[in-house]
Length: 126
Image (cartoon, rainbow, N blue to C red; front, side, top):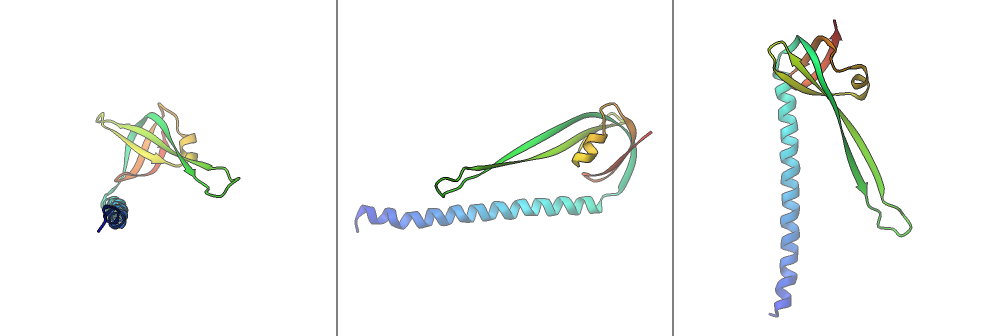
């Protein structure tokens, strides 16, 4: 057996290990999402007085590479919108909201926040 033969035998093993790691990470991530959904479903639906303390956005950029000649890489982006509410107790919670909802909410607004676990359900100004 030549030293080069061992190299060719090791490559498929490394590819398989990498593939298994990716699959495990995908399964764990799915599990976390399902677990959070279940916790939200089991949480009570609450409506409490709150004030909007801050707003922020997070832009994710994704590059799609093309292997064909004369094709440019395609870049897409997605924006997530977050609003932080402060309760009468002084505690704060941040919720992801839709873009439309984000545009309607302003820092300093007071009202009644409705949520279930980590799920934002609405905000009614008072």
